[in-house]
Image (cartoon, rainbow, N blue to C red; front, side):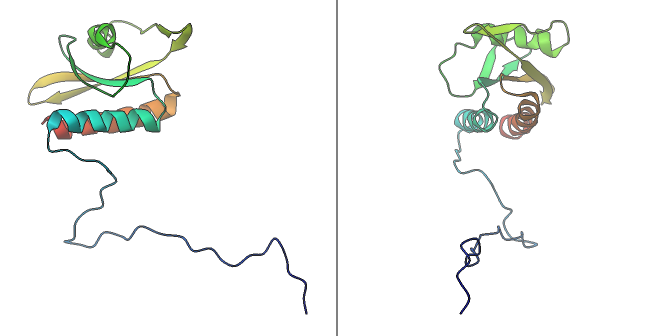
Length: 144
């Protein structure tokens, strides 16, 4: 009789998402949904910010007015006001929070002929850019 190998265990089962079937419903990764555009965009931005460990995500109109934001306690009114200037390339953001420098990325989107800016604050560059792209796509989809 062979001794039991502690490094060899019974195979573990794992789950794989099923592939979409032609004509079937598409897979949707969103766990929470809302029929309200305001709540839906807030949920999308909050999820994106959480995935990338961002301080905040926001959508701003061309005049610097806050349209939507991720949930949180930060006052984003000043950041909203400068976001279009950063998005147009007219300024480099220099943002500090509690003594630490925060990076900011901005993406410009158009919806029904109007220009909006989606901004992501904090986090690491690659994660911030990835979630900024997802946030911009969500804003286009929800606000259109």
